[in-house]
Picture 1 (cartoon, rainbow, N blue to C red):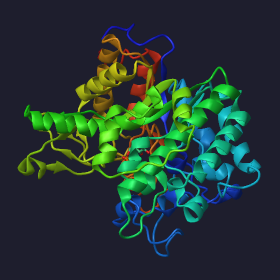
Picture 2: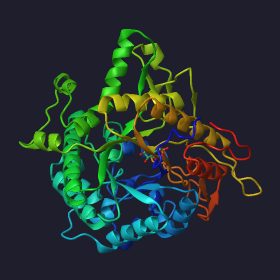
Picture 3: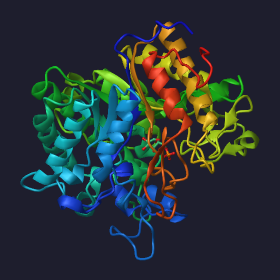
Picture 4: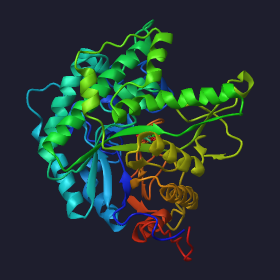
Length: 485
Ligand code: BG6
């Protein structure tokens, strides 16, 4: 690969989220948030979907987020390692319930604000720019109890207050923002994505799309405040992306793939183009959905569109209308996909498709014509520590190398990509399974699924590899021999 493909100031780095790294779940006044109610084990998936029996942690369950990897106390050590790899940016999220423990407190929690002041200062002193998501699977539990979370319009105002508070406080430190992480997750894991809990017999789709409308308005208002308070900042949306392929060229399959893509693009169409897409009208009618909108909402959406499109890419997806073919689903991916015979799978059943990354990036750029920011990509895998204390994660290097190569191809296709933050540069708690053994990091964390371990950090082989990637601005150097992508 040529060495001049990635722009000079390309934003290389990594991405983490408060709920999966910080721990200290009740420290310094923090309130409970969504993940504090998600145990490991079999119950987790049902809870994430909104079938949750209690809005308090249950006796006898293990909650991995409560301590996570203790980033709250160890962030200096971790940032030093990120700096050693040469990170230009670190994507983090702010825990809403550290700033407003109940979500509707009269004044923000100073201890929470100070934590992020210190975190951002530490990053900046290490030459790393923070990229901040306002809500990464995060709603204060009190707001879920009081208002049913995003099903209520009330959340729009409360979120606006929260957003204005953090923009004002960090305006000199943070110039890249994002509103809701993987906003389309609301359709697949509604409790994880948006704090939605369902009662028996409720019309879930109606509630989900009403909540989506509230988030979309809240997102536009956050864009407005960000532009007013920090005129030199950029603020984006964030999509769980991954193009759907039709299983065959049967037009029925092709149409279904288009519909499946639209399910996700729906959100970004509103956030980026500023209005509900034409196909939404028919979709709402066909599904008997009535979305309550306030006068003025359309104007808010139209006037405050995002500056860039942030997205995660792990896998492409495949769909079909053939009931026989549909039986062969891959496990592990919340989006549900038919096993694609042309590509491989991870240990968790997630499709590995580097070319799909190039395809997805091209489609997003064609559709929105706005800069793209790849804010998540990576391989969740089991790592073994050798007797010499080494972790030789060649499989991870292989995955990332192939994906970064395709990202380079997309840039040569003309797609404007401003940065790449791989997911979980240090091992963190898995969002979907709550496991620690599903590791994405360049840095190993000594902790297991049950919460045992010293939390010691160890550099993996991929640590040195990624350092070279950044140093050479994408002209990857494999450890040992000098071989180009
Ligand atoms: C994305 C999320 O869905 O994928 C992250 O934004 C998550 O929070 C990541 O961790 C990887 O998924 P998992 O389930 O392997 O942690």
